[in-house]
Length: 260
Image 1 (spheres, rainbow, N blue to C red):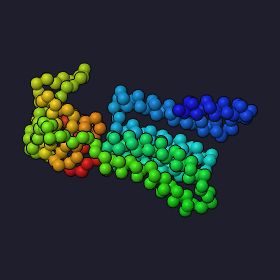
Image 2 (image 1 turned 180 degrees about the horizontal axis):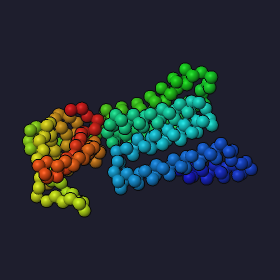
Image 3 (image 1 turned 60 degrees about the horizontal axis):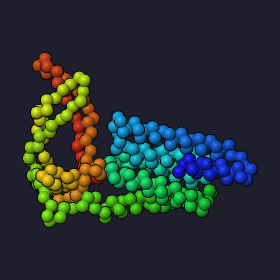
Image 4 (image 1 turned 90 degrees about the vertical axis):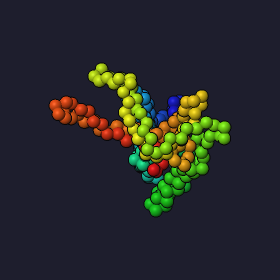
């Protein structure tokens, strides 16, 4: 779409025998750079991890583009660009569920950009209070549909009366089998790490195997495709105990968007 917009803009100016203003040319180059940066980061996260940040990254890049455009346009556009950057960073810091972050990014692009143009055409450049109110209105228009749909729409279909489920009570020990690919370390396929379940869990089964739907306690049903489950290994430490080396890791395994 960006290439088509760029092509049609040049064609329309050529038909009117007009040249591209210097400021617009620089802003266009900045937009292309931001698009290239986002594309490069998307591929890098696919191969090297960090995909939970992808939608926050695109939201921040959109905010940077809007802010740069606002430097040569109206102050309200600058403020909306800064608000978009803070929106992406705040969503990442708050640990929004992957699906919620995706719809927030989509709302920022699909609703936020037209709303920003509509508000900019009606703003008074000499009234900062009105400008601030317009930014609040813009944030409301962008955020409200996302969280309203996340609250009232079911994230996964609840199992029917004929669906087979497996209930795992809290305190049950669940073995963890780790498949490690490394030129330095190896783990036997039969070695298991015992884990104790802290909350009651329930899984749906198809042909005797989990089909991806689950819930904790009496909470709402989720699907593994939503990316709600998050496992982060944030610290790896090597120690020597009684003359033998040990590797200790600290990780955090949570359900994003839910409180225990």
